[in-house]
Structures are given as structure tokens and as C-alpha cells.
Length: 500
Image (cartoon, rainbow, N blue to C red; front, side):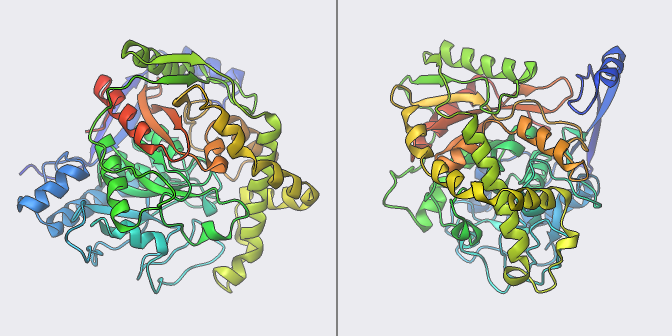
């Protein structure tokens, strides 16, 4: 067997101006005729090889490998690349949580759980320095559903404070790096999970999404990231306390079939009778679809050239396959974006105010990061706007449903521009400037969270900086099946980029 080693690849590229750069800096970057970037991956000739979760589960079932061998291989891979990725919050390599039920569809496949979900024996710190959690006494409600699939839990992954930011960066700790180009953001809030899956440490990892936190890191790292419909899964504890339940649980994977297998497996644990079953989706459907095309966000921020080109490339691919793609308008206005910002600020205020009572008595608001503190202050200065914002947001489902009167799916970007360099969205940036940057970056994903509807991020090539670009497909409430079918079709037509 070849010696296990992290692969660090230096690759040439013609860089594009970073959004954080001013005109002078941008010109200097463009004047450079040659530059290099760092890629990290942990793929190796070991028990895991290059297999996805479905392949590894089959290898366990046939006796070709064991859960113990897979866990050891994943731990070795993590030990090699995580010192540079900084993706793991808490490791449990010496005490993996193997599944109790060997009949789970993904039995024996190693994974990590995001550090905002309780796993017995491990702390849950929500990405914040405001307190230090002790080990959880029991698995969280959603963790039980995740573990029912047979996955082996090897630890917890990093997220930005309370998942409020679309980049996994911190006030004083090292950020989580993008394995495609370690100078760049990995996205968030499920950034630690995305880094480990993209780099080949594990084939599947837990993620959740309150404003794009599955789809954003998927787009930044070339992964499949499906945000399910509200009610599709067991809700986590935090979701039950929200004025509007915007959080969906899920996974990040490198293949469509892994995401499809996981969704089918969690239905074996609990299926919501109010939603149509997904079942096992094994490939594309024969039916041709009407697909709406949206390229500009409701925030008014322009979509950058590379992102727009990726979305139009996806539209062309779908048209060549016989689908009908036609431009359409978003069903909401800039007022909706302002209302979502008010909800975002409210959630930050709730987290800061309740931390001492809900999380730990040692909770210290002085240790909160700049984004959380800024959002909290913003909410407190305009609390009178909250009731109206919530009232309008609760009507989102009706507006969203109108998009599907004539279309089965809607195609759009995931983000308005490619993932930026680390530091551009850091919580250390002046709050007003940071808020403007965030508002201009995350223009497409929150609508599905408020509407409670499904959407998927799929890779559509690489940017000139070496990082992936994602496209988003959205469906009507409860129609994850159509998303998976079209995802299979896109994956077959244009295989996803991989660090393997």
C-alpha cells in the first residue's frame, strides 16, 4: 500500500480581482502574469480509497473492509491535513461512535457532526469563544436520526459563531481554509464539514442551513449540498425556539448518490406523513422540465461575471438535454431582504441574551465576535421593526409558490460572487463594512429558508482562482425528488470537479 500522505499541489492560475481589493490592488493582481495557489487533499491508497459513502457502505456489507478500518483511515487523513485546514472542532479518533444498528444504509462510513448539534460525550460550542462547553450527556434529536443511518461519528466540525456568517472565520483563532485554494474562504456556516469532505477526509459530513449554510460551503468547495424542506427531518433543538423555523438539517457529499442515499435512509427512521416521500432516487428522470432562470439577486448586488457564466452554462446544458429554460423574476422585493436582515439581527440578539441561561452560566457576551455584537446592536436600535418584518416573512411561502405555477424548478446562482479570500468577510472587519459585504454576497439562498422549501447546490466548474463555483436549483415545497433527479442528470453531463 502506498504511504499515506497529504497532497499539496501548486497550480498556476490567472487570478481575478478579489472583492476585498480596491481598484489599485485589483490592477496589481491583473498585472501579474503568473501566480500560484495551494491545494490540499488527503485521498490515498487506504481502506477508503476514492470511494463515496455508498461504495464504502457496500464494502463493509461485503466484508471487503470494516467500520474500524474506515475510521482509522479517516483519522489518519484528518491528522495529515487538518493542521492546515483547521476544520475539526473536537476529535474523537480514540473513541469513535459506531452505529448501534448494523442495518443502516450507510453502516460503517465515517463522518463528522457540526459543532452546533449534541453528540454524547463531546462538547457543543456553537463556534463561539463566549463559553466553554462540557461534554453533552446525550445525542441531540437530529443526531439520533443521523446516526440511525449507520454512520460512524469521528468528531465535530468548526462553524463560525452560532452559524451567523457565510465564512468560517473567527476573531482570534485560525480560520478554516478552503482545500481548493487555502488562501480562500471555505464558506459557512458548515465550513468545517465542507473542508473535510472536499479534501477527502470523509465522504459525507453533517451540515445545517439557516440562510444558506449547506449550499454556500458546497458552492465554495465543489460539493453537493441539498437543503431539505421544512419538516422533512427531525428538528434540532435550536430550530424549535425560533420565531420562524428557518433551519434545515442535511449533509455535504461529493456525489449525488450519497445525498440521495442519505435522504432515503433518514426516512427509514422517521418520515413526515405530511410530505410526499422521497424514497430512493437512483438516477435522472425521463420527463423534461420547465425551469425558470434567475441571475440577479433581490439585494441589488450584481452577480459577478464568472458566477453568471456558470449559471448560463448550466442553463445551456439543461436546454441541450431537452429541458425548457426561460428567464423569470423573483417573487419578492428588496423589502424582503431587509426583513430577513431584521430576523438575522433578532436571532443574534436572542443568542447573546439567552446564552447564559440556555448554554452555560459562564457565557460572556464580551467574548462574542464582531458580527454577533454588531447584529445584536442593530436589532436593539430598531426592535420596533421586528413584528412587521416577521409578519411579512411568514407570507413568503405564498409568494414562493407562485414561482412554480409554470415551472418545476428554478435555476440561479448560490452566491453573487465567487468565494473571497480569507479576511474579506472576517468578523474583525468594521461591522458596517462587513454587513454591506455580507448583504452583497448572500443574495440567493435565504429565500428557501424562510419559505421552508428545498434547494440544492451543485458544482459548475472552477473559478480562475482555483475555487469551485456552485449553481442552485430550487423546487416546490416537498419536491426534493425532482432536485435529485436533475442533479444526477447534471452530474452525468458534466462530472463534478474533485481534488481526488
